[in-house]
Length: 69
Image 1 (cartoon, rainbow, N blue to C red):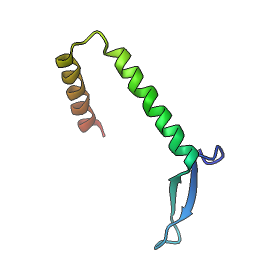
Image 2: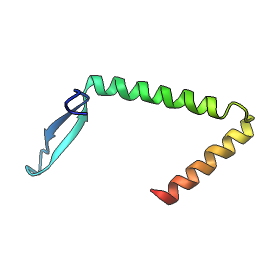
Image 3: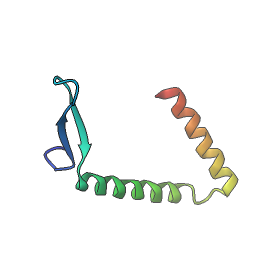
């Protein structure tokens, strides 16, 4: 991501051994684009579900994430 100009590496202000990564303006744009692609893919994948089923699906995914991360 750094060679693509999406992030920049900065020295940590209190720990000279560490670096911080920060999104560049291009990185922020790419992140927003990826979020939109994700939103559209989820909408397409759940189009056959009614509102209650979509909410149940989201709740189940959140529960799975809680126990796997």
